[in-house]
Length: 476
Image: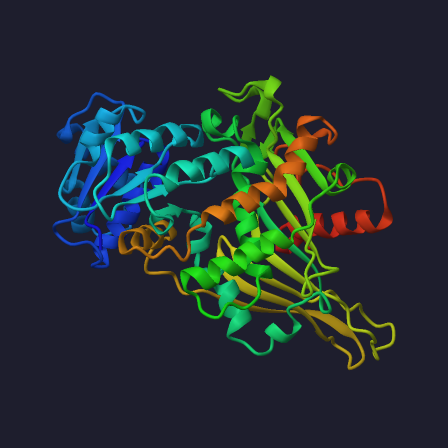
């Protein structure tokens, strides 16, 4: 296990909200020893004491549910180096020390190439590892270039392109539900499954993140990485083991099977929109274009929807819809697997057989199976739901990711070819959007998103189902 962690971008939001609380959780669970060290590197003109004071404050704010002694131990283990991440001399000082180091680039993606180049020139101790956040590159060309830079720095096994979604309990339970239960795997195919909705709708608006979000947008921020990763776990063939090679090979197979969208497909099967002023609960939300730090001329989307099909024996004929939006009226974060209807109902006309839908709740984590059962009368039908709640995990998602990094287990990180395949899938969408072939729609903050499209009865019905499911359970 590596006992040194260097964080570049050490005073940023990611470090404050996730990385240090994750380290406190690891310490509380006994995963970090007394010799573990953290070096924070950023542009602020601070010293060790000033940084430890900042770390202590962030742990109190974001990691208050962890024991005080664990938080204090993590703060005491930190030191600080003022550094320009593109300067090899500064970088060399930040990673200096005995033994290998795990380098976490908690930076805007645009800085990754320069930071990796500086690390290469500075040199890393044998056995070191490097961690990069999403999105990996800004397009397919950028991802390939970054992969080449990383290959010159460390072996592929030492590169951790992390996605904290993969460490969520329910996300991992997608595999558990499929592969450990005979009742599901035989029907986990297009013969029985009509559609899969992978949704991350949130009531949160921009929340002061314009510097990052207005250069990325919903498609790159969520769909290109998080939602495509969920697609891989839902659609992959059963791996021989859950080891790094078997698991990641099967994920790449899914991405390679995605049918690329034509220009016409992009117009019909993708949507983009941004929110207008509105109310979410009791708070007023300004229009995205009026948020501090936003450049309206960029026409950045806060809502993205993409419908994909897979050219594979298992999934030919099943539609996969990936959707995400900000400033919506309801949080809906789930994978919803919609099964095809039964071929015959011997119940006359009393009641309606609702679609069977297996829902993997992402936040909050849980599992729900919507079925149809017998109603008040023997020949009538009524909805029935079976619900399971997950036990709270011992470690937060970032804690599990960091533990994998320190232990050198890359199974749940993204391999280089996988990152490139994900960009390949969305390149036609990006091209169509850049050419304005797909209009930038608008929706009021606090609504269900842009209204259902008016064309095509089949498409209208699918949209209506999706928007109905976005409503709170009591309103359905």
